[in-house]
Length: 489
Ligand SMILES: *[C@@H]1O[C@H](CO)[C@@H](O)[C@H](O)[C@H]1NC(C)=O
Image (tube, rainbow, N blue to C red; front, side, top):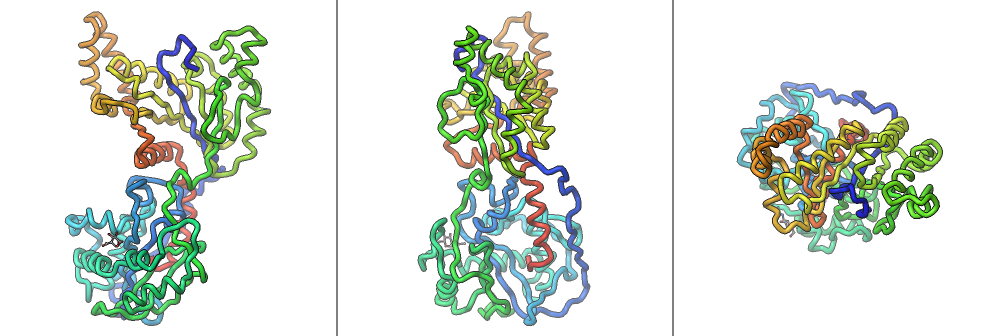
């Protein structure tokens, strides 16, 4: 593909597409109604609930900045706090007692610690008592903390009390030392896990499971923080797993589609391949075309066969499957001919959410003029395809001087203009200004760096694409809202 003389920049365009159902679920969410009862009966005991993030996170495919499930290599590697809950001996519990609404400034000194040990593991906002939705911490304070204020005091004291208990009784340490270490293949006896905690703390915990995996451990305390037994029973099967963190990418079903008729080698399985329809070599040989003309011929052939070939192939995929279409990099396909535009429209008619992901090779960006020409190529793809669009500076791992490139990740239009003016003769000043304005007005001047060596970088790129494509939003709604209100969460 590098042999095409008119291609100055090695660019390649990926579409990420995900099929969505016709009805998006919209706002038919179950709304949890919470009454604020001024006086509720004084509670009997506390439960400290700690959760195992890999199990919890397996529920959701959606990623966002706030979620502890999306921190890549920095994802939590130990149990994190779910909450400290006041309970009644009859198995019920008070909630949303009278008390001040959550105020983040009260716990501003604790935020770093809370982020680490008490992260939210969801992208949806939690229901709170006074406003309808808010932070996970707001939910825990308003729903539970207000009801234990006779013991745990105000908001700050509720959080600090919970943190102290969590630090004092390290469930992760107890389980790891007893040999219950994260594994995607082992199963452990629930009884063994319970015994390990009994040996360490002389109390019987309540274990909560999700699909055969340990999700939560609850420790119960008297109101003066001595251990006592929990009221409810464990709901785990005899053998449970303690899964390792799976990266988001491995929790979804991804299919790669090759749309480059000249491609030869793949390091990954290809689910659909344009070469099953037509190959560049055959076209060049039989029609006596050069590589560039041959490519255009192949793509036009694809266009003519969209209905037959693509429709049939797409039937193999299900709702929530994630398809990546790897397109040839030749700029003509995004500037001259409508084939990819028609391709995209075809996908959209089949109810796929489609997003264009434009990859610009960061090694190519050695100065401002090259950066601008990269932007213009991306812009022509944007204008042609009329799709939500993510720009990526790829191969950051191969760049020797990262500082030079970082200036281009989110540059100031004015800085770009003055650099451009410095590099080019005075007769170009007007053109330069027009170019920068164009690039700026299309909000193009923003690139996401991709460094393949860093899991966090990959996760970040993935989350940008997910936002663009609204991937997982429906899934998250389905999972969260049905649970709410049934559990003491
Ligand atoms: C709990 O123990 C684990 C394993 O020994 C350790 O990595 C972790 O930092 C401890 N957590 C806290 C909050 O002390």
